[in-house]
Image 1 (cartoon, rainbow, N blue to C red):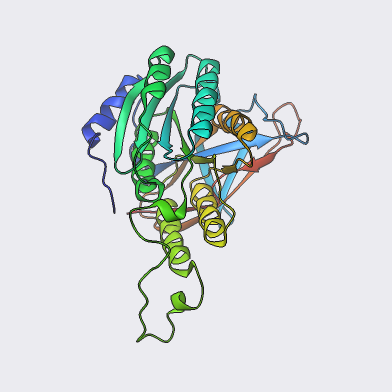
Image 2: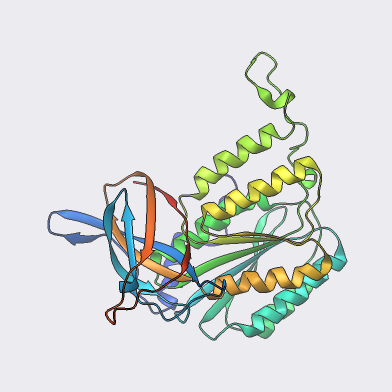
Length: 330
């Protein structure tokens, strides 16, 4: 996997879990079978598209291939949470400043249950600020962040997904990532505009279809991203309109949705604040369902989650958003 994280070891991930004073997950015996826990972020919206709260574990039913999974717990939007903000911004300073301003405003709105870390996802992935509840410190670090270098989202997103997934699985804290990017597919160190063509292979479509190599890379990355359950939201503050950048943005959408997240595209400078505000609303209204699956299960797990009737006889109504496929590792 490219760009393995150097700044947090597995030992440090465990310490982060302990820092939340919550038990780590592990395999749990049940008669003759061994089980492991899956943690599934999920959002519930009502008919007016507003996020719905007040739900409990027994309001959810989870199945895979028509077989029910045991729901062992639920973390609500009021539960402890960790949020990572990853910055990949190297372009128009007016748009970057607007994004910084919007981020600062949204950070002040977060509840005390949030610890927030800042990452730089430019030429190399590094920590700008370790997770902290100190909002003033976070604002200072956002204001001092250097905007130099090449785009780095494609090179860093898998490593960020691995980091956030590790924390999600080893604690009962909710974990979310927000990428803020202005990346242009032509501004990466790797040349995605002129990929090498295998002329001896008549089936190599790179020479006939622009962006084919990029699409194939995104397909491979999307499969890899389905191994990680912590949702990643991407806010693109300066999306370009040419064909290759359209293909790139479609790829970003696939990567975000594979993790259970979303892609937001800003059309104007004014849109940036609205998009970032909406992204924080998604992060803030995230539930996390704990489910048990047999530890020997592997391959792609196709999930179906529905709302079920409460003890009071009221059927919750809502539109559910979650990652439909999870690639299980042995």
